[in-house]
Image 1 (cartoon, rainbow, N blue to C red):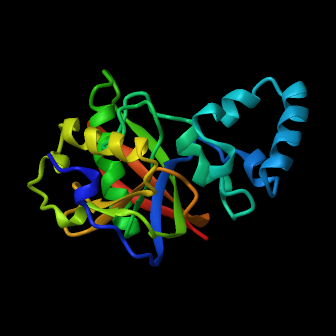
Image 2: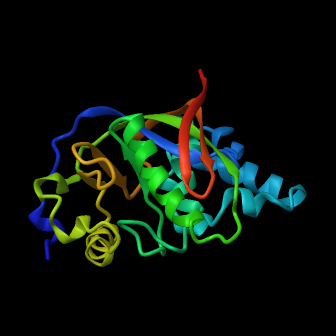
Length: 230
């Protein structure tokens, strides 16, 4: 089993990457309305008195230290949401107890990754004959300084097992416990491309909406279409 210390560190490069999020989850405006943690605390306390839905919108704030939230950047809510709205089913590098911000080197890579997981999820929903799922395409700017490079490992390595996350959970858990910035790794669903798993949103300097995509379900996902562009 590979250990986090066995992976080389990345020296740091300013990069642009891509992400797809379900459009049924709106951006969390409160993160984008303030410039720093102090302003956030004041506004949060005020809004908490009058907005009974605020906790659901913000998510579990206890899962991320305020100092890790990149207040003041364009799209702070998009960068922060994966860490306060954690998927309890987990993901490749999380067992479901913490959040990870996943980014892809191309929008096509992000679409392929999300399509796979949507296909797998909706296949388990009985009697779903036809549906249309709409996603926001996001473009992120970030630095990979201090991240660990798992692309040194071949796709045959156990952390890249298509449907068994046991080994990747171990590596992701180690990265989280050691407060690593994140990992660069091979895209499993789009071989030849790469993705990043950020354990904190701190490296993100901007993350903005750039397009909308739809996935059409008819027994399976039969098409993916870009429906708007900004």
